[in-house]
Structure formats: C-alpha cells, structure tokens
Length: 124
Image (cartoon, rainbow, N blue to C red):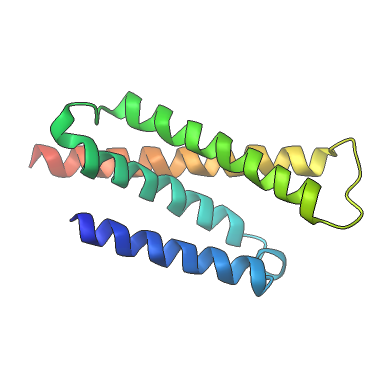
C-alpha cells in the first residue's frame, strides 16, 4: 500500500508539472480544482497509511493536517508568485485570495472524501 501511495504522489506531481509548464491551469479552468481535490485526498491517504499503526489517523487529525499542508502550499505559491513572476504588484488582489480560498476548499473536500471512503472500507 505504501508503494501505491508513493506512485500516486509521482502521478500527482506529473499532473502538477503539466498544469504549470503546459498551461493547463490557464486553458482548463477546472484543472487547479481537480488537482487540489486529488492533493487533499492523497495527503489524507498518506497520513492514514503511514500513521495508522501509531493511532493518530483519526478523521479530525487527518483533516486538520491536510488543511495545514494546504495553507503551507498556498504560502509557497504566493512566494513563488512574488519572487518569480515578473511585474508582480502589491497589494495582493482579490483574485489571488479567492483562488487560495478555492484551493483550500478543494483540499478539504478531497480530504473529507477520502476520510469517508476510508471509514467505509475500515468497517467492512
């Protein structure tokens, strides 16, 4: 199962690469939402798989950890925009804020989806 998680991360990073370098984030308006949903689900799966024997894979912990990861990812994206984007202007506009909130929403939605699926399989 751990190997499947690692290959899944490789797949997600490949999709992220395509989004950034092939401009799929621009040409497909939903692409970023799908990636954040998958990222939230995959982060949840990673936490559940790697920490299940330590007793800390409870749903509240998993969701909170995913949201913290999402916040740090958004800070990383903002820093990349500030330092790598030519002609970046302050103050940060509402488009950037709404994009970050949408990203965090889909991170959380992916996490909740995987937690529900995980709990359903755990009971059977």
